[in-house]
Structures are given as structure tokens and as C-alpha cells.
Image (cartoon, rainbow, N blue to C red; front, side, top):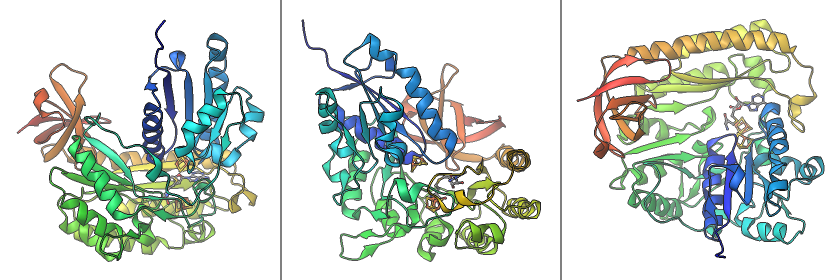
Length: 441
Ligand code: SAH
Ligand code: SF4
Ligand code: F3S
């Protein structure tokens, strides 16, 4: 009998940083001889890369674990691991609550995954939620061969020092750390050599990036963007997620002057009420946020804005909520994410008296109605316009390709396969609910 390679299945929850981390964990295990599989049923190692941001996200992990547990009866060699932010927040409790879990690894320790898997296979305790000093990315293998997609994420900054009163991220990801610019540039060049045309720089507070520059200075995000701009073959640069207080002049300016920087910006505000912003410890007012938006728009008038909102934060009155609606009216979003406040263990806001769930649900519906209206109006305004699309994959209809416009709209057009991985000009012919139809020019 030949030894078949072991198979790894990773399920990813939460934000893009987890998507990036899942790719790195896959590479680390491929270097150990594993092959990736899309189906948990034939896997020898299943990893859930989890999110702790809201209660629902964290609880989903346990229902998924319950569903995976019976697979162990069919394959006694199967090992199940929990990675990511739930792993960091709950540690050994996870194994106590679901004994089918063999391994727990936090988001700052996963460069040690191969050793942990070996321990789990040997039937030993396999738990690592350290936040070591060393840079985990320095300890991970680099991929080779053609990139699976023409777009890639690149984590440049991790962790958060802002401590918004509702948020677990400073606890699950630890303090803000920026990776050295030289290392990021060489990773970016390697991605481009493998066929990547668009890089999205990632960080929980990506615009607070302050990494060691190759010239001995500390680089901000704008410095990094300009250095990436100089890489031949890289056509598009994006970054996410930003904090309004870290939007400095150089970065605002880059939106007007760097042609590779795409005109789409996710800039969460959470609330339009100064009283609630203060209680949230956001350290900015609604007016300051709007001022940043106005400056960005004078640098780049067609900038499409996206935001995050929380409704039902402790103490939020109908008047506060009206302030949020007013802010949304004033800004005009092309895309948005809105959530009902979820009390998270260990965060300051969790101690406060809550808005009733019915009231919060009602506000969420009203806010989402307004945001969808704005979103659709922006989509519809694209009809007849020329945009550029980076084609990423085949569409649903034969002969069709799908990609993203510079504004991050999904666009499909009849186009030859030779345009896969290329940027092409198209004219938008129709706005659908979640995408735009277009013709090649
Ligand atoms: N670093 C980013 C976002 C991190 S979390 C920032 O500073 O904006 C992504 C979004 O989840 C947040 O913007 C917020 O809208 C939402 N969120 C975070 N904690 C939450 C909570 N306890 N309840 C509901 N939504 C929450
Ligand atoms: Fe969370 Fe606030 Fe940090 Fe964003 S800035 S990750 S919302 S604490
Ligand atoms: Fe979730 Fe952790 Fe990202 S809590 S949103 S996976 S940083």
C-alpha cells in the first residue's frame, strides 16, 4: 500500500485577516506534505479559523464542531483544531466544552502549527495561545508557483491599541504591530511574479501602519503604497480596515495622486451620535469623521465609501439613532455593513445596561433600508459608465468572465478567457442587485 498524503480542510470565519491567515496555515501544512481539500469528509486534519467579534460568530463554531464530531468515528486518525480569535479568547475552555477538539492555536502562534499537529497526533495536549515576540510571518514558508487568483491579501499590520468599548480585537489579536516594509515589498514582488495584479493591504487598523522603512525611517501607509506603486505588473492597490483618526494627509493625498490606489475606501464610523461615539471610546466626533470624508472626496471626487455601523449600543436613544441616520444621509455610502450590538465578555461596554433586542432589531432594519437604498442608487448610477475590471474567474453563463471594478462592484461581461487575470475597459449596461452587467470596449 502506498502512503497517501494527508488531507487538510480549513474553514474560515470572520475578517480578511483570517482569510490571509488560513492561506498561510495551508502553506505551512503543505510544506509538511499535506494536501488541501474542500470537503471536511475526506480530511485528516480539520481547522476552524474562527471569529469572536459577535456572539453569533463565536457560537457558530460550536455548532459546526458538533456537526464535525461524528466524522471522527469514520476516521479515527482525524484531528480537529480550532484556530483564530475564538481560540485566543477561550483557549482550553474549547476542549472542555467540545472534547472532539484536539488542538487549539491562537492567531499569533500558528507558525508553530506543524509542531502542534504532531503533538495532537501523538495524543498529547496541543494548545498554544501565546503572543510571542517573534514575527510569525518570518517563520512561515513562502509559496511558489502560479497564484490561484489575480488578487491577493497582504497583512501589513496586526492587532489594535484603540480599545473601542465594544470590541474584542485588542484582546484576541493583541497590541498593534507593523511588519517591516522591505519584507512586505519583497512579498508583494513575489506575488506579482506569480501573476497577482491587485494587492489589498490588510490590518485591523491598517492606516496606523508604522513599519521600519528600508531607508531607516519609519514608514506610514502612504509610503508603503507609493513603494508598491513602483512595482511593474502590479496594477491595483487597496487597503482595509481604516480608522478615521489615522487618515493622515499623505494618505488622503495618495487617493488623489496615486493612480494604482483604487477609489474605494472602507471607513467605519459605528454611530453618528457624539454621545455614543464617546461612550464607544472612538475618540472622534461625527463632524470630525465627515471632515475626513470631505477631504478624501476633494482629493478623489469619485471615491466610493463603505462603512460599519453598530445599532443598539448600551445607552443609545432614538435621538442618537436619528443622528446615525443623518450621518448616513450626509455621507452617502456605496457599500455598508451594519450590526446589532453584541455584548462581548471582557469588554467595558458589556457591563452596561442594554437596549432591548426588539428596539435594536427595529433600528437595524431602518438603517439597513436606508443603506440599501443608497447602495442601489450608486449601482444604478454606474449604468452607461466606463469602468475597468480585473477579471478573476469564469462567469455563470458560457463565455462570460467575472471581476471587480475599481469601485469593487462585481462586474460580468462576455469576454475571452485570455482576459482572465487582466484589467480591461468595459461599459456598464445594467445594474443588478449584487452585480453589474457590462460590455467590453
Ligand atoms: N478595525 C476595524 C473593524 C473591526 S471589527 C475598525 O476599527 O473599524 C469589524 C466591525 O464589527 C466593526 O467595525 C464593528 O462595526 C463590528 N463590531 C465589532 N464589535 C462588535 C460588537 N461587539 N457588536 C456588534 N458589532 C461589532
Ligand atoms: Fe476594534 Fe476599535 Fe480596534 Fe477597530 S479600532 S479593531 S473596532 S477596538
Ligand atoms: Fe473576527 Fe478576529 Fe477578524 S474577532 S473580525 S476574526 S480579528
